[in-house]
Image (cartoon, rainbow, N blue to C red; front, side, top):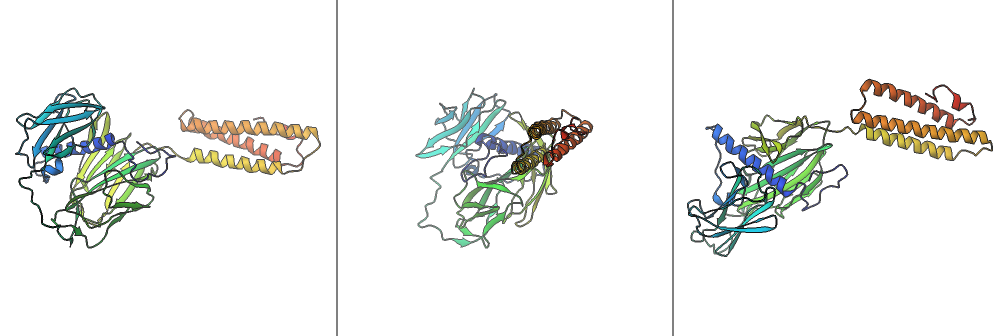
Length: 429
């Protein structure tokens, strides 16, 4: 859900985007990376193990429209679980299909756009996928990976915490969504500890968001170790073996349709991955992004880009430009004029009363004239903002209205206001 101009800063556990839209952005990037592998034989991507891919939806074109295929395995890709029930929950309804000889359960004709989650129970272990929207075109493939208990080792006691380093894994993403008056940023960080022991990095895992960031929040799905205060984000150690997730949301002012950021992280980023929702002529530029493409998903256009490794402490330079924005000048002008009128009204109310009925009538007429001129000025600003008046006519008309207002205010401020001020040149213009 895009943040509106009057929305208060995000609070902890409040998701700025709907979960479906966030999953859609991740799916777009996953599809983009697959295309890059096919197009560039020299590209090198590390294949994550089966557990890391468990429950992640992947859009494909080799399934019928609206179909969802769930593969159920135990431990590794070579160990399919056959003739086992798999359930999906879609739009509040449940559907169950048993896996075939390849360990796949296929669900056809799922209602398009419905929120879907795949579920299976294997040997007492409950498996769930991420929630995602049912596709309108093409299909979705995903895996559910159960633990191979025959290979699981049981430690006699927990491994001790050691000093060591963590990395920001290749599954991390930065998602950017421009809006009318601000740009929303979402950091989906996968902090990886490849050791079998919990580790404490030599320096705290902490970083500063770009200057001007507001509405900072830790999103749902993050580890409780992740905390945000102002523009500071910290993830407390020690880090358990495997993956610790920190998902951070914040926003920056639109900056007149263009914005530059430099973001540093306290650990090496294995691979830079960026998704930008394209609004209007939105563009993404960075010297650290080597591949960039536009892709469509669910009627929206996204810019997906990826780069190589980023060393800890090295700034990631990003420029997002060309997105539509609304100037705040007309609103500020209206507020200033309203303040001026309020001050003048207070001043006029404190002036001594007069017994002359003609002066009272004249003042009443001047006030009515002032209100009409002010309404015309506000309407002119509104017409210009909506493109209903050209700049030359706007400038001429505005000067005319301002001149008339100045003379009305001058007449109201005069202590000898009488029938004459209403007839002065310019008041009737």
